[in-house]
Each structure stands twice: as structure tokens, then as C-alpha cells.
Amino acid sequence: MNDFTSNGAFRQGGLFAVLLLFWVMLNNALTVETVVVGVIVAAVITALFKDGMSFLTDARLNPQAVLATFLYLGYFLKELIKANIALAAIVLSPNLPIKPGIVKVRTELKSPMGRLLLANSITLTPGTLTVEVGEDCLYVHCVMLESGDVNEATQRIAAGFEKYLEVMYG
Amino acid sequence: METLLDLIGAGLLVLGTAFLFLGGLGLNRMPDVLNRIQVGTKATTLGTLLTLAGAGFLHPDWALKLLLVALFLLFTNPLSAQVLARAAHRSGHVKLSEDGIDHLAEDQGDKL
Image (spheres, rainbow over the protein chains, first blue to last red):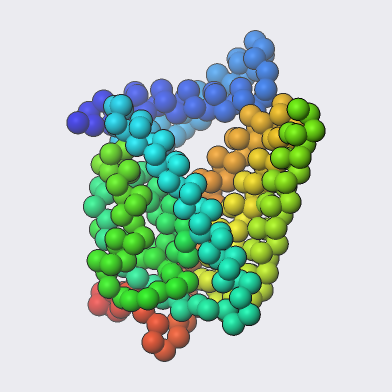
């Protein structure tokens, strides 16, 4: 299934293309000089990090995955705004209603990139912060932890993101 | 049209600054390191994103660069927060209240 994207040449090509694109965007100019410099720099970086991880690592390239990426972004932004309003309410309330705790959240995601994105997303959403990544689970700090039930926490914290990341990375 | 863009941009800037302020306030009010990281990360991420968006409306020709800055921010902010949190927990600076749940400490206790 992932034969094509786990192929090194594809990943390096992708990294090179992204670096070059960023360079051109940062320069805001498409002249011969900037492109030549960009190609050289991007090639050197690609060579140095040829075994590194990029967000193309293990990414799936099919229509469902592309759709899932957009849905994921939308869901993520919604959660980010909700997270901030919820935290703002806590910070502004005089008695500071918090009940912190660290809960274990199971994840089905196998690909390192999928798990990285899951951990990052959790960190940026309502009252949760990924503290440590384990074999098949994440340890998440919560500002408001109601119960220490692993399944309930998995549902509440990870399931929303996992649904999309599953399709994108597996 | 010009003034409308300016208005939206200014509004976003104010909103972004408000969230950054709340983040600062939260840093002061929260009792321990993990809770502080929580407010710090979330409020600064949204606050900065809104500020960048506001700047994008005021200077449409900067939009592309601002988008790049926003992307870097989205990728690096949670990472640094997570590494800080992990370091704090590993060095034993995390103390939860008596009845607080800490699965991480429990699981590490099993391994030792």
C-alpha cells in the first residue's frame, strides 16, 4: 500500500520540491539567481537529510487522503479556537478551576509521522498537552481531568484527529 | 475596499493581541509547570496566527511570507512544548495534587 511513498527517491524529491518552493516564496521573486541558489541549497539539504523524516514519509497519495487532509485542517483549526476560548475562560475565572492530571491515550497509528501529527494536534487543543510518547500510547496532561479511564480519554482526546490521520498515514 | 481590509486586519490584530495577553496572564496564574506550558503554547499559537493574519490583511503583498511563518509556527510550537513538558516530567519537577492521576508515573514505576 505504501510502496510508492516509502520509496526514498519519492521522499527526497518531495523534500527538494518543498524546500525550493519555500525558498521561492520567502524571496517573493522568481528570477534566475534566486532559483539557481535555491536549487543548490535545496539539493545540499536534501542530500544531508536524505534519511530524515518529512511529512511525506508514509503519506498516502490518493483522493481520500487528500480529502482527509483538508478535513483534518478544518477540524484542527476549529479545535484550536475552541481550546483557546476554553483556556481563556479558565484563566479569567477568579478561582482558577483546574484539576490537572496525566492520562494515557491509546493510539492505533503506526506511522511515525501520523503519530507526530497526532501528538502535535493534541498539544494544541482543549486543555491537553502531550508529555511523553510510548509504544502504542501517548501520555497527555490535562488541565481538567475528570476521570482516569483510558478508553474514555482516548475517545475524547484522540479519536477526532485519529479518524483523519488514519486515512492520511495509516 | 481598502478601508474594509484595514478594518478586518486591525480587528484581527486586536484579537490576536488579546489572546497573547491572556497567555501572559495564564502564565502568571497557573500553579505549576505543565499548566503553564499549556496556556503558553495554545494562547501564543492562536494569538500569533491571528496577528499574522491581521498583518496579512493590512499588507496583502506579505501574505505569502506570513503564511510560511504561520506554518513554521504550527509545526514547531507544539514540538517545543512537548519536549519541555517531557523534560519537566523526567526531571521530577511535576507534582500533581494528592488525588491527581498520573498514568505516566505509574507506568514508569512498573518498569523500574
